[in-house]
Length: 518
Image (cartoon, rainbow, N blue to C red; front, side, top):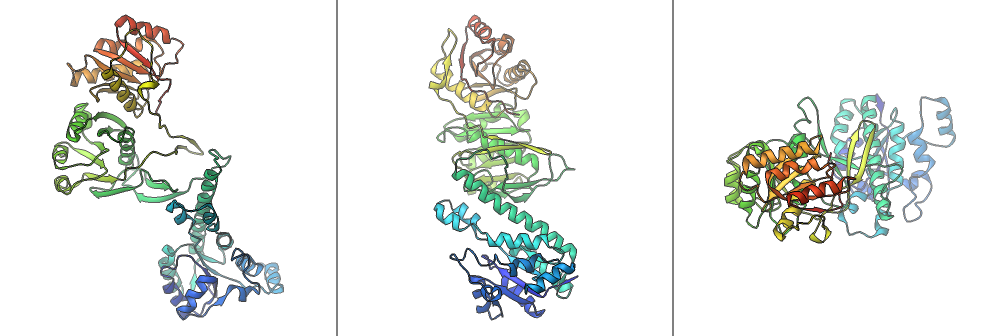
């Protein structure tokens, strides 16, 4: 056990600090402190030595230098098990400090405020605080460190149980937690400074993640999973409000994000509904009538929709909720649920209903972790208009067909490669996802479209996420009744594919933009 005799306290967040002070007083622990914390402690009636009096050196440079002193860091880093450390501490009149309670300047809060000047952000970068936390964490053999009020209760239990001391196990654990806190803090600063300087890819990259919630389980029940939020001044998918239902699982979260991404990848004036299963759309539709958009999305593949995630980029009302509860779903995702709709959805008590904040897309990364490596790339926010299309066939698509092609292409972006999407009247008729050949994906898309829309498929449109390497890739689509195709182009056999389209009398447009999704 390590008896605590002297504490250094310097905190910006003074929540529940008085409770700790009571315990320290009870065990006759000497306290030294800085500026605002010193005033707080003495105003509460506790004895405390101000840091300048303790070190014999004044605070200088508007408070930038106050704890960066040998009497502080020598007291934190001294290994009192070593005689030479004891001798040097005695020679330099340095006393052991064995409890450090420090939390840092609120750089994170300022970052999240968004509208803060560069100069104010710089002044909220803490230097002395992280230095004290790191020094005390390194010397956990002798020093207890508390980097946040959230650990006070655990410390007080440990402190009282051990009659004013702490165990090596507790100190070692708090050391690990504290190094994580300082690494997170530095990561926030590093990423903000990189953004300020327009640096996209640093040679060394850190990601400031903060845990949001524990999920029911991982991809499978024997795996654990947590949700972490990458903290910056942008809003995004982490702004969720679960208003009912069971705890989310890892797969629920993945499917919900893909659904959210899809429905918010269209013009905000469009009412878009999508149903996702195993991270692929099985139905998607856009309509001025919200109920019709949902019903059209469901009709795209009502079999696969069972147990899926339904997302809307518009509010759910009583009429939509009445239809939703007729099918078993895992998750409903929407910007808003009306009070009447909530009552109806509550009849399915396990159904997870999530409200999200609708935000504009902003530059961001997607990350894929693979054991010791991770991939970092720009998010795919590509979107096309009519002027981006290059007509390459003799037949020209009609205005209606162009609308359908653009809709199909936008949905296709969110389908696992190889991807083929067949649409008509701004709804999906068939989706072919994740096959190792483009021909295979086309076969599946046609099979589903012919199954659920045997009449409507005639005159439909189709999108491909990448070029057709051979002309056989469009054969199934032509035979099924597709009359217009959108694809990136770029194959050395593009002309063979164009010739096949001309022979069939269908139109084809090139986008020049591939949309692989793995």
